[in-house]
Image (cartoon, rainbow, N blue to C red; front, side):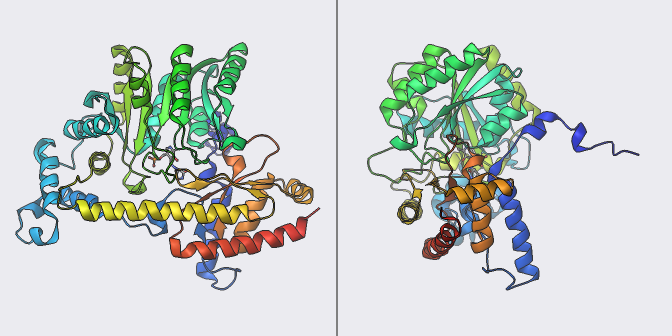
Length: 482
Ligand SMILES: Cc1ncc(COP(=O)(O)O)c(CN[C@@H]2CONC2=O)c1O
């Protein structure tokens, strides 16, 4: 009897969906890792270096002490009754844990919470947003989520009715967006970031893409902006952000502002300004612009990817629409409480004068300064490789160099039925154990080829990564040079 479930009879939207960050190269890497374990010495390297995913703690980054102290105490509240706890935990972590527990009904961190998240934690997050931006924020606008990803999916679910509904997305883009649009049966309307101007976003190109989509009968619903950018690492200038806000208001678009890398800024001439702050600074209020701002505990200096924490701040939507957003968030009951607590800590870290402030600040600065050094070291190394050109990583966690591949390599890739940058990434993996994601997984100007490499290997490993990468690239170019 034919299998009742086969690829042929699955939801075609699932088959259309792709997510390269954990795609074919990573799957092959996992096979090689298995081989290293069962047949040590059988490969030309002794470990797999996963530079494909922004997963800092998987590469040795340590969690922030204060955050973990508070989480531990909240997870096991009876510790707070024990005398010895005072010698093991900082006084401000103890008081913060007590404050958080008092905001949870029955101090029950194992219970379902309100579907938007625990009110007291949303109050803390709203206070953190207001302190960051200098403009009010409302706890009722905040929906706590299991990372930013579910928030993105919820908004795509809300906005996309059919294949005629379009979402303007940057190219290159983080493939959560293309995957979610595909899963929800919508149309991705691309706008190209300009590599020559450091991945600048030209409003004229936005306008052209919007008009082109509309002329094809696409109802463009929203504009996605990722700032700082993934995979491109640029930090938008404030005047560019103002133009984007104006564009969305004038064109009647929802602005989906992905700001999960807001703490990852590595250059002195740029700083992070939220789109909420920009819009309010321009005098745009609730009635002017529907804006959704995404934040996560997975990035920054905290890198708590596995704790699955984050939120979306929803402003500028009518009450009936907000009711629908609440309804879809309630279908999943609530996000996990650890992630909720962590999101409130990330938005309200220790302040000057708190007992933990000095150690917290030292941990935070140490991580961010190291990330900046690693970004610079890898950027310089890439720019010293034949055929590579790599823009500065002003922020986020990635470098996205363009590679001018010889025609012979492009033909070899074709013969192997692979995109040239995927062919390169596979050969890199098989020679060095380094895992990167081909640019074709993020989208790129046709005929250009890129790879995305994280800046996350621990600092003492970066020289070895560079040496291995350089040796591979020189051998690859010698093999395929025209
Ligand atoms: C721009 C952007 N938005 C949202 C997310 C989702 O994060 P969470 O769901 O964990 O909050 C990521 C994750 N970054 C992916 C995962 O690691 N590497 C990446 O490119 C991201 O880079």
